Length: 358
Image 1: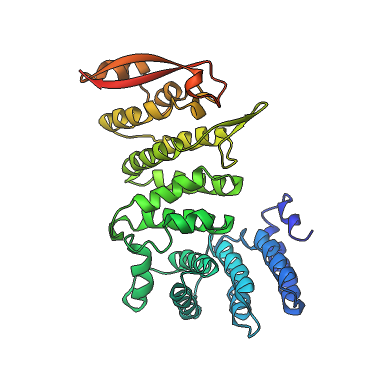
Image 2: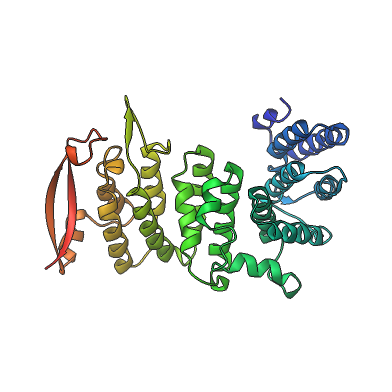
């Protein structure tokens, strides 16, 4: 109940005082509680309040965190809960004098990677990585940490096995990590960007609404940086691979893929990936062409049959007819595909646009 009270409308003038009261109350609860499940629940509810902090984060938050992970009877479950709470607390605020906790975080991170075969350790490392990416800047004293997050060839976090088995919170952390790396350190990334982008596309198509919503927010920020067009084209390529692996299942008016993801989620994913503005004309044509065939997939047509036309008109200010006539090196063919080619859909037929060399 104390956690969900954070959803009430609070006057901004009163918010600092109420936040301080919430911190005091939850801190006392953590000091006297001994059961693991209850501590985890307290921290989850505590985060609903502390993630409201903006500007400078109170020093008491860091003290609570240090005390929590430093307890002798602390186990991996408790440690993970403290890390997730602390990440949410620092995500939207600034922390001054955080240097005293960095060595502890680096130590925990190193130990977790040394036992990377265990899922729980990698989940812990992913959360710590996000915290350090927020608090720190690349430096020689933490070279081991920075080399592990910048080197995509090592694939500590962005490998298919880990992503397929990761928890909802860890998937959210991977989206956050990808956003920070692609937005702030694209020039420092060693190796192919595809593992990062593939993870974001996977999360965009997750059967978890929480993961999808958070990933959409992260991608919107990535698109706003200078490499937005490059990212979008790579993401559309990965999205095309992903959507062509699914099979559509219908139950009344509801359609999902075999993983339980609503097909509408694929429409939402395409819409956020192509919400570009202020790009060059040649880039517009490239993205429009990338989008053309993907938007004619049954999962898209089932929910938004005019997505391609609407998208290029809204975001690119170009009509479908103008786009077609500007492509001098291609011819346009209409193909009516009978629904028995996709027996799991309810589409009677679909109009596909296929480009062939002239």
